[in-house]
Image 1 (cartoon, rainbow, N blue to C red):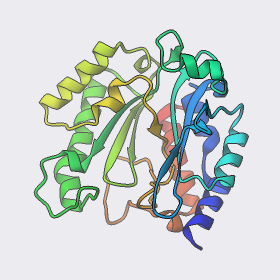
Image 2: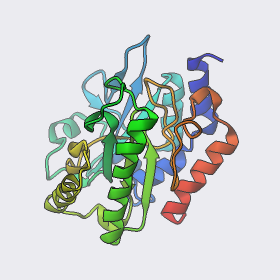
Image 3: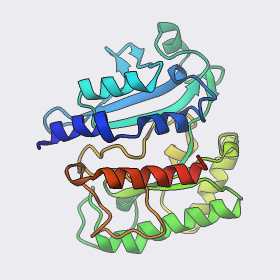
Image 4: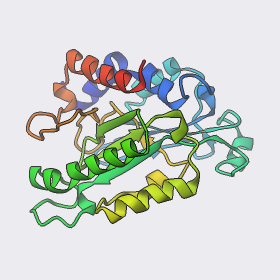
Length: 262
């Protein structure tokens, strides 16, 4: 089965979109139509981010079914979700108010984004690669450092996700994580920096930043952005879209539910 057919099959039948919508709307506390959504598509070998309709009106959906239908019709590679706004996103009025403090209703989740290429590695990896050496020497220890800090700060709902490419995302999904002040988010980043953790800090500090959702597909590698447990083995735990099984999807989905106490 070619990549396009794999994508269609995956997003139509296996992708746990309902669960991800619950995460992004904080268990349906906020309407899905007010959530900022973007999609990655891959015509030929390029990757394009679709965030607006014809460059003018943001994508807005009333339910997960419509998002899934769109993803299948457009052969979407990856799904990104962000902040919740006061009004539905699909209007010109929304565009004019977009990303103003008065318009933001609920910030994007607290996420720490780690890429192997940001560390002072000496292996033979190219810019967008991650090998077993740099993963185990730099990136996984940094993931552990983030988790330890979050546990120290009494966060409970910590989800670790392999990005599918050269790094990991650490999601903090406790309710109070959404209420952190910008200064508190910055304090966490500063503390991690002092411990040698290299972050894409804008993902953490920008309360409206879009983040690729867990269980989506990495647009370049074709690997699943899957949750991980206490260990991660690059030889066994990187799963390409073409090789993923229903049992694996069920296992990873249950991991997310366990973190959320669903």
